[in-house]
Amino acid sequence: MIMEVEKLIAFAVVAAVLVVVLRQIRPEQGMILSILAAVLLFLWILRDIAPVLEELKALTGPFHFHNEAGQILLKTLGICFLAQTGADVCRDAGESSLAGKIELAGKTAVLLLCLPLFRELLDIAARLIQ
Image 1 (cartoon, rainbow, N blue to C red):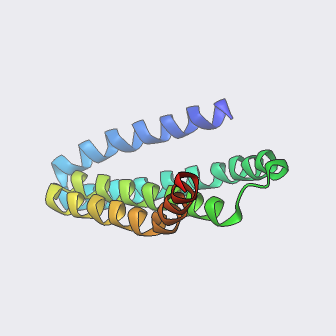
Image 2: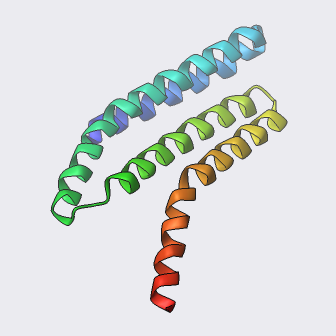
C-alpha cells in the first residue's frame, strides 16, 4: 500500500511539473493535461478504496450496522470525493466561482441524502423524551 502512495505522489508531482511547463507554451493544452491527470488520480484512488470498503463491511457485520445508514455513508463519501475533485479542477482552470458552486451542490446533496437519518434521530430523541 505504501508503494502505491509513493507512485501516486510521484505521478502527481510529474503531472504538476508538466502542466506548469505546458501552460507557459500552450495554456489550453496545459488545462487539458491537468484535468486528465486529476481524473486518472481519482480513478487510481477509487481502485484502492474498494478493499477498504470491503474491510468496513466485514468489521460492521457483527454489529448489524443498519443497511440504509451504511449506504448513505458510502454515497455521502462518494459525493464528497466527486465534489472536491470537480471543485479542484475548476480552481485549477481559474474558475473559483464555479468551484464554489460545485462545493455548494455537493453539500446540498449530502444534506438531502442524510434527511432520513436526521428524521430517525429526531424520532429516537422524541421517544426518549416521552
